[in-house]
Image (cartoon, rainbow, N blue to C red; front, side):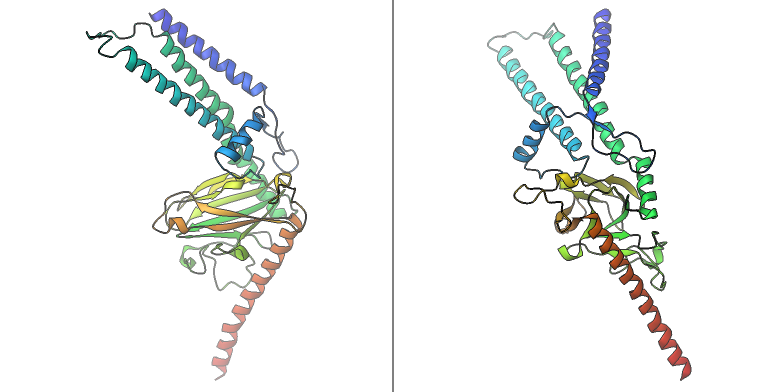
Length: 355
């Protein structure tokens, strides 16, 4: 008995190793990877069954087509897990029905306490499930997660954002009941320091000193309207740093295949890149010209209170040139507004002292 158990275990381990190696060998080079000089090769992807995955996601799960570079990897993972769950559900249901028929009281008037004596079938089934689960985790789930939260990649995007050469964008997302807020570094390429004593939920969620006149950070508060949406460029890596002002929220943009928790006291990273070749209009035609814009719904994927269902926002994807123009205009306007706000109290103080 011990020899059989050892044989099954040894065979299962060899099978798992062989399956993992085989799946990795079947992968091909994916879309563009990290930015900047000395970047590593793009991550590999398992592109077999892509047409099946796409049909299931669009027609069965009714999900919008992905527009980010990592989106198809997410879709593959979702479809493969659902296929495994469907096979397990059908298989165990048939096994249960077979057991009910075979071991009913008429066929077995006297109870048999030994049950099924041969366990080869169940052992093979159990090891088969383990093998598939290990392949899904090691070949799909772990590489996907490691890619989208890769610290090295995040740092490269942040460095590119500070340089201001259009090679990356760092964006801070702040969730609060029940709105989405965003902050961009302005034309100076740096984020202003934050202080908790300045923060409030009405007009200063990021806690920036309201008396400082040389701040040009662009703040988007309550991104509920299409005219006040969070704006990102396509074909440029975007690094998000996300947190919450009150309870746990979850930033979800389905076409981007981005979903990440926003937790108070933590700044959690994730990055993505919108692939312009995947952007389509309502008729399915390419829509990646300079004048094209794409508006995606932001939802909260974490129950966060009685207003959870209304915590929606908008994320607008535009041409990189349009984004740069928008950010420069917004940053300049913010700087002028702060300078004007500082002049008014200074002028009032001078008039008061003159009296």
